[in-house]
Image (cartoon, rainbow, N blue to C red; front, side, top):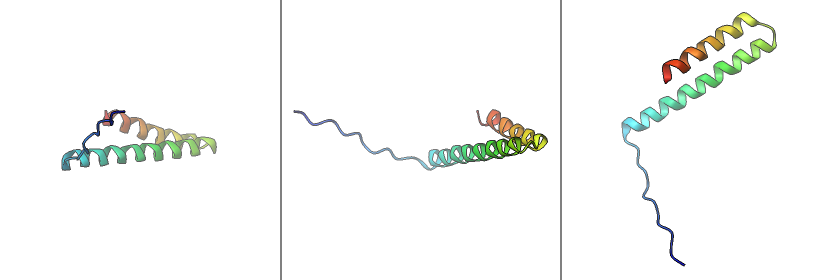
Length: 64
């Protein structure tokens, strides 16, 4: 039985590492805004929920 080839390790450049951290930060912020929107909606605080969902929507559009 032949040995499977081993992939070389992937090293991120400083730029790609920073970009990965920014993407992670945006995802965390989006999740937080959506959670706050959902929480406010559940408590029938529709104005605040709308504000949180709007912020999340704008962030999503800008991050693409």
